[in-house]
Amino acid sequence: AGTQRLPRLVGLKKALEMMLMSKSIKGVEAHKFGLVDAIVSADKLISTACSCALEIHEHKRPWLKSLLRTDRLTDIVEAKKILKFARVQALKQAANLQHPLVCIDVIEEGILFGPRAALMKEVLSGKMLEQSQTSKSLRHFFFAQRATSKIPNITNLGLTPRRILKAANVGGGLMGSGIATAFILSDIVVVLKEVNEKFLNTGINRIKANLQSFVKKGRMTQEDYEKKLSLLSGVLDYEQFRDADVVIEAVIEDLLLKQKIFSDLERSCHSNCIFATNTSTIDLRLIGQQTACQDRIVGAHFFSPAHVMPLLEIVRTQQTSSQVIVDLLDVAKKIRKTPIVVGSCTGFAVNRMFFPYGQAAGLLVDYGLDIYHIDHVIANFGMPTGPFRLADLVGFGVAVATGKQYYKSYPERCYKSRLTEIMLEENRTGIENILHLMFGISWLFSLWTPGQVNLLIGDFIFIMISDKLLQILISKSMLRNQETWQVLHKILS
Image (cartoon, rainbow, N blue to C red; front, side, top):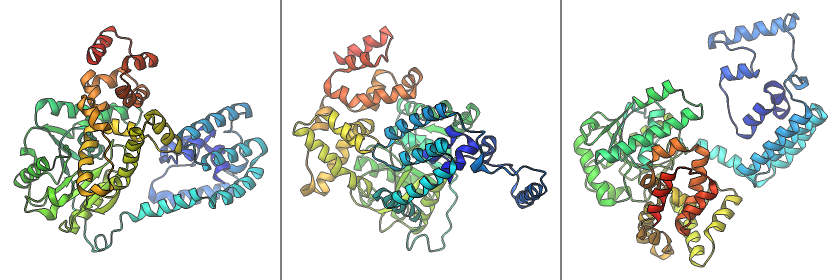
């Protein structure tokens, strides 16, 4: 009866947030909203609970039956407005999911007709939803997610994870800076290496922007921001890598470059250091081919943005030691990622599933379909974003580089669209590079709110193909500065 008791304890708005977003709250907040009666230390929990029970029995404390409370509920008119807004948001978030709307309906039933009627509706609705394919899939997902940390012949060997106190990142691009942010957020010291001062400063600014986004959302104080940032240092050589416990390489998908980096790492780091690559497609055996430490080489494939997306592919070869896998599983837990351990092959698991999806989108465009329409249909289906907007966010250079790996490994399965190659030939490389060309990412985030940035990014794939940047930005009313218009006009002319 959570649909009835929770709104009566914490209020309708907070209850909807917790139920529809599966948003947990900590003890202090739970006490503030009335979900718990007291906060005590673990050693006093039983005694306090017994005291409360005795006080209720002796009529010294009122026995409040949550199901019958109405003091935290708003009036019916206001409640209907809140529920209407919740339905709109639920449809925006996942248009094809039935259970969020059913949840709202059951809550409304309780407000309009009382908790008893709503309890009956809750039971009937629950039975109906239990039989749906969505419910079966979510249950499968629930158990599958928990099985990811149990790897046969790895996690059952009795190995203890080694402590990871310092991480080093090679590459401060979009992925590298996101990975560094994920480690910093978990209070792990990070060294970021780049090839020159310009790229290093850009990478550090990306990390600052990532952390500032948490401050703006109220999820981090300015003091916490300064503490997290103090864990980061930038370098142009490998000197500070000597005491790193794990190194994550996050450079472009260039095999020769990665091979050189791993050879350098072998010379520069201590003998137990874990060497991880963020490659999304290249076979790890090739990356470590020129080293004598293949037992320490592992894939750590994050997903963009790396400090937000929860999935982490841990890629192993026949040579990767069980200890390294156990260590990386522990790292994933510390940085709040869901790990999946996969074998080494082109594309690993996730991108091997994704590649045909992207190829189908390219085929449809080549046959004349509108990219607006393709992305719109995919978003309406329930995906977070369409394939073209995703390619734009990741960068077309990445798409072409990974595509080459697939064409080489699976030529008979590939359809080769020229779309991204044409974009690159015209120096249209995706939102990340366009924004740096125009303004610099830190300036952009200071000028626009996250919502405006998101809206701009949502248009950019279409902007770059349609050559209507000025018209689209005018329609969005985002830029009012005359100097900025002159810069934009110069870029387009």
